[in-house]
Amino acid sequence: MNINFSGYNENVVTFETDSNDVIMGTPVKMSGSGTVSKCSADDSFCGVSVNVRNGYAAVQLSGYIEMPTDDTFTVGYQKIGAATDNKVKSTDSGREYLVVNVSDGIVGFIL
Image (cartoon, rainbow, N blue to C red; front, side, top):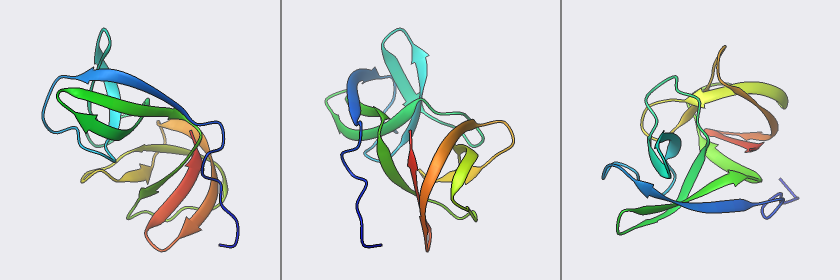
């Protein structure tokens, strides 16, 4: 791809984490007041952790992000949910996001 969407409307917020399985690149969900946890398969996610340290996670809540996937995506609005191994997948019940880039094993979308 000859263009780059990185930096578009990025919004990152710091949350506490309630477990050690939240690492950089993890789709996360709210698990308590001011606290996030790793999503299970088929969960809707509020954002993706972009940095984790000492029990805190910086979570990107909006903007462009690229995530690994084993699913097939096309550009346009699609429902996306968490998959296993810090990946995302197409779902019937996930949140709808604008997919703007699809390449081998990677889907780029606007949170």
